[in-house]
Amino acid sequence: MKLSFLGHSCFVVTINNKKILFDPFITYNELAKGIVSADTVEADYILVSHGHADHIADMVAIAQRTGAKVVSNWEIVEWAQKQGLTNVHPMNTGGAWDFGDFKVKCVSAIHSSGLPDGSYGGNPMGFIVTSQEGNFYYSGDTALTLDMQLVPRWASLNFAVFPIGDNFTMNVEDAAAAAEFVKVKQVVGVHYDTFGYIKIDAEKAKADFAASGATLHLVPIGGTIEL
Ligand code: NI
Ligand code: MN
Image (cartoon, rainbow, N blue to C red; front, side, top):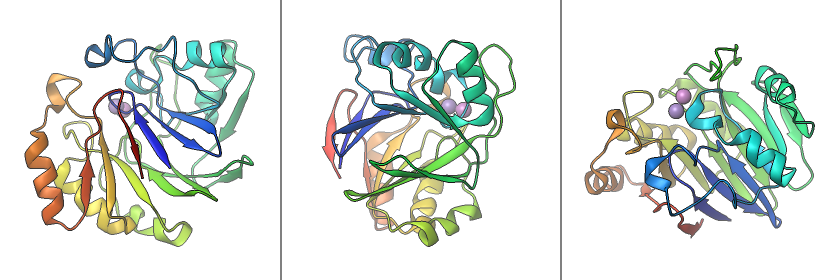
């Protein structure tokens, strides 16, 4: 599977020639300026883990331009409909749905989920995506949680995408433990360096991960890797 990193926690995974965009936050990301643009990103599906602005800021504009189907929790989908979006699919923690090209299972995340305008954003979620081409898990913003030990019951993973920036989410050490819990060796790190609170030492992070027996991929913004 191909993964393109668009900065912060925004990335695209291509499965069966369909582009699944996660947590669109591009326009207000200073690090992404001049490299990627919300005006040109392509999407067939937009999966949103929770309601915080740094995960949803470009959702409405990209969904309107591309016609992509927005998949998130009930409250965020209801909010998306109030913004005028019609191609939506509400889910909630514990549930799975077969979208044809791939299947999504929503799993718990330990975080919060208020929407940018103060609306209630439901509970934050992680996603397990399974398909003919392989399986991956995006935890969303979360603490390390024992619930992650359930993930191998549902999918044997090719890779996982974990936040590593600390302060709001797991740090590198916790993400390495999460990799053990979900039994994965290839991890893509997200949610780091964007703001002052979440700056990391990239080389140290990769070395610490390697010591734990897994590989941490820190993909440059605009970069694509095959996993
Ligand atoms: Ni958040
Ligand atoms: Mn966040």
